[in-house]
Image (cartoon, rainbow, N blue to C red):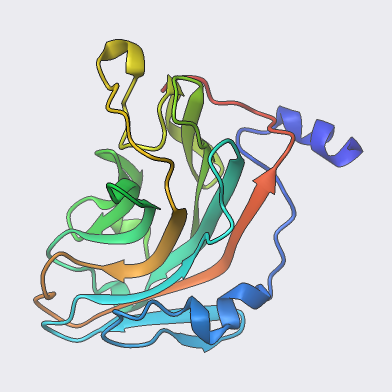
Length: 225
């Protein structure tokens, strides 16, 4: 508790993250079955590679996530050889799986803008040869009491409160986002490289310190940005 209150003066969520890969990352079940190439796991770094024409190399987690929980998830990322993709690719996706299945949010990457979230630059393309951290904190709610916050290198870059987070934000019941749907069967967090179409050139991305956790105490709320 002393540690958590000490963290309140900082600009982003501060929780201990081990340098070694967590066990869930190293299990065969973590590799997304639709991956064109399996991620190369060499603790503490994971390497995701795509050849020209390939679409996906990814890991997944989230089978125990539930509506009502507060979750923090993130990773450190860098691009090998500064060979950024010409097209926009996702490096992180959060899905609700159910009826309907919906992508709630994503982190994107391309050669022009670097890493972006909801159209805002998170990490400039010129800086992606070095390690940078991307994190999201979400309160999973199917009413207007959820929130979603994005932090890059521990600085808040995008945040919304009082939203319905089981659908893509910004989505509020009181503003007409009132479609009645069943609770999600589960949530799924994907990390790696994910493209809508085959990439136009080979591309290599690395991640380390992949983490996700259930939160009880949430210091340093970002509000609305």
